[in-house]
Amino acid sequence: MPECKHTPLIFDLASHSRAGQYIRPLDVPKPDFAKWFGKEHRADEPAIPDVDEITVVRHYSNLSNKNYHVEMGPYPLGSCTMKYNPKVNEDLAALAGFAATHPLQPDETVQGNLELLYHLERLLNDITGMDAYTFQPAAGAHGELA
Image (cartoon, rainbow, N blue to C red; front, side, top):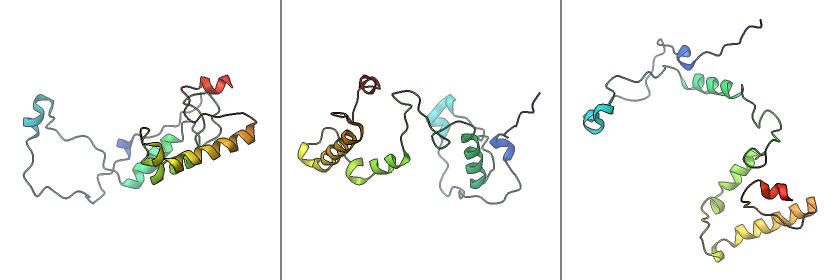
C-alpha cells in the first residue's frame, strides 16, 4: 500500500523556543469580558500555535496547492460560478472609478463605465461573431442559451 504523505498541522509546526512577541502587554485595565459575554466567555487562553509569519504563509500555501485551482491549470467546468476569472479582473474592478460605482448612481455619473462596457461589447462581438453581450446575466443559462 502506498505511503500517505502527511502534512503536519499548524500546531505541529509550533516552536516554543522562538523568542519575540509582536503585541505589547496591555497598559490599560483589562476589560471584564465575563461581564459582556456571561457564560459564553472563555477564561482559558486560546490554543494559538507559536509560529512565525513565514511558517504560516508556507503552511497554508502548501495546503492550497493540494487542491486543484485556477493557477494550476484550466478550470473549464460549469457555467455559473466555476468559470475562469483572471486575477487581473480583480485589479481592474478595484480601480477607484469602478470600485466606488453604485448600481443606482445617476447615468450621467457613470458615463466612463458605460463607455468601457460598450467598447468591450463591440470587441467581444467582433471576436465571437455574436450580436450582443450582457455583462450582468441572471445565471449561467444565459450563456448556454447562446
